[in-house]
Image (tube, rainbow over all chains, first blue to last red; front, top):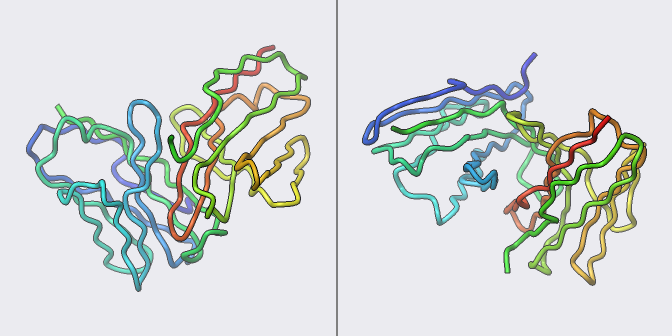
Length: 114
Length: 108
């Protein structure tokens, strides 16, 4: 059983389009995250979210928005896609918000903007 | 200075070798430390947490030096399957910062 799943696995789209990436976790975790890994392999946190609090990395453009229909899902919406958005996007989850928590990552979504 | 820095690598070592990775962090308020492993085109996975007293898990030993703001990972008797990128992770508050990673190739 996949603990953290993402769809789609690959996404190729044109500049200016709006797209969404879905993430689901079946671990019963309260906290979910989105990360971006660029071509230089730097993994940077974009959002941390649980039912009570959303923490946004201030460097993330407001074209990116997380949407959580329930505790098990955290989708990522991206408006007006730009070339620089091309990267691998990882969803992750942890039991709770906290420094000690282990994060479990999804398999990643490879986004290519043309 | 970057928040988390690691040895640039790549490290190419023969099977059976011992290899050590270093990581330094800039925020003295950091509270928790981890080593994650990422295989090529795969997601990161937790290798081990790093505790103040140092900890060992089989062939892997992690150490933390808070005074020097330094973390290390030692791999003994390296296996071909250890080939991966090793990511140092530091957290403070609710912020997790990943290092750029060090790539390891274990050669037959």
